[in-house]
Image (tube, rainbow, N blue to C red):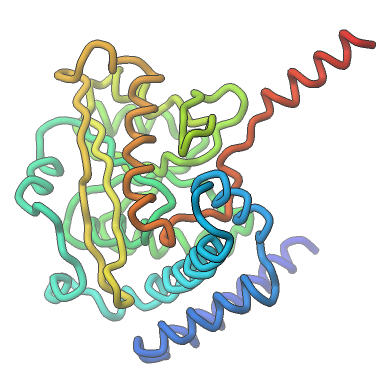
Amino acid sequence: MQRIGQYFVYLVVRLLLAVVQALPLAWAEPLARFGAWLCWDLLHLRRRVVEENLRHAFPEWSPQRRDQVARAMWRHLLLLVIEVAQAARRIHRTNWHQFVQVEDESQTVAHLLQQRPLLLVTAHFGNFEMAGYLLGLLGYPIHSVARPLDNPYLDRLVENFRGSKSQKIIRKQGEFDRIEQILSSGGILSLLADQYAGRKGCWVQFFGRPASAHKAIALLALEHQAPIAVGYCVRTGRPMHFRLVIQAVLDPKSCPESMRTVPGITQWYTEQFERFIRRWPEQYWWVHRRWKDPRKKKRFRSRNRRAA
């Protein structure tokens, strides 16, 4: 029964995508605005989580300002889906420059073509799906680490989009040997690095609050002496128009000794994320619980046990 339900959801999604693909791009903006009103004002999807995250990240903002950014975030998420659905039909190797601006292009190309392994790190910001698609379209051999979706039919659909160009997908679980092989051979590994890593993660400061981050990125950088490039793909006004940016690079070979630790590297790229999220807060995924802290619950339970 579960597979039947998953397949039904898949068919509904395919039908919606077919409708979106058939629509003119000019309809994307009004459609996304209507969907944002529906998600935020009518259905209140993830409203409590989004409000709490924005309140902690931007305590100086008024409630009206946070409400405005939350609605703009939903508009952004819906535009992201529309852009992904229409990308293959609109952006090709012969016309990509009409849609994408590569900031500091010569330096970016130099980072991507260097004869060393590279960790390309980003967050749930801008259209990160298009970032991998565009780099693959331009011929860079990117390997992206991704968690499989719970619905196997939707997972196959998303993987087909991600792998439609030169981008290769690596599953998060069970493929560590493949990751090691890619970096040992001087390849490029792309990762989303703003996900909650649990109680045993590396705890860093993100918007002034403790956040758990995965240790693997820093460990891989130190083991393979691989530079970490923090980048993003931000929408520049109109739908389907982006700017690809490598914001900062940290090289374990030449960075200060104090930075060559797991906490030092993890805090560094987390601060880089915060910089561009503060600039375009409406293009960040405020819908997930980035700041869960089970350490507090554990300490609370321990105090209760001692008191008992």
